[in-house]
Length: 400
Ligand code: OGA
Ligand code: NI
Image 1 (cartoon, rainbow, N blue to C red):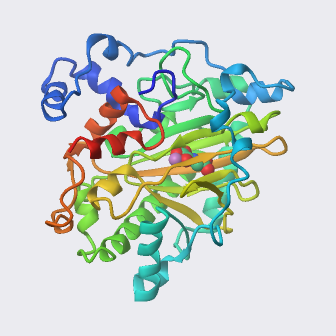
Image 2: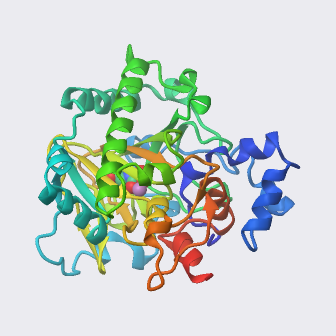
């Protein structure tokens, strides 16, 4: 990791707890053995601490304090600022492909449109997806209400870098890490052993049930998308799912809250990154854009289609598809007029399954582009090297 860059948070999740439960056990040893150079020394391990190195500042509180300029910690280097990249030409009709999922399950034409979106964009919007729009709206508005609770109520859910579960405002544990203009809430849904509903918000009323129902439906949707993606690679429809460990997938939710920002041209809501996991199913705000996807050299602002999910490939999908489907960098811009809420569901491989290109996609002309690694180890790799753009999956590629 470039010291000081925020690295992508959710994906450290279990590391700290695994170390504390098996600090001298085989899991760290086998990690060291299998992944060259991956050895966390004592100092690095002590970074996996149970508290943050600096007092946590809630971005929402900063925003509501009425400041007219943002603290230096949120100011990006000039080359990373949104203001300097607006003039880049936007290629073609620049919105994400919109895919009809029910169509894609039945019709070859819609299925290949989905496959093409995965190859060309690494992103698409999905409609006709089977998740009830009322449930989607209720979930998003419930989370909006949560973020509008008084600070003391939210603080009772404050997270630590051990598990990242709960209410958070920063991603890296290093002192001085660059900060983004957002707060978040992170929780586990799958595997059931990691699910702890007591850590989910208990307000608004019945919110836990609602989160449970939303999670169930989104995970189901993830499974359906995986099938069409498999068929598009000329694989049996359960092949990608099997590569991810069958039905024992991981699923966790990160709810992002982007407060209004007095100087949106100087900062970012989330810095550029690719999602480390399998697939991401994002429910964006219905009336505030913010997500930008890297397409060539340009940042394309996504215009959400009402009641659609935005789906994107994570690094593990890039790996199992041997680079045919690509995880694409994206980032979030903020604005001074409106806050924004988004729900990012991460559909991940089982953490201890070796993840590698599926053998059907490895040929003489196209050898395996990535070494084998579990998702657990991949998170450790990130923990060591950090996360910045697509650096981790790219550096794996270049080690061969
Ligand atoms: C994420 C993410 C995009 C958004 O949480 O990984 O990329 O629109 N979010 O909030
Ligand atoms: Ni993301």
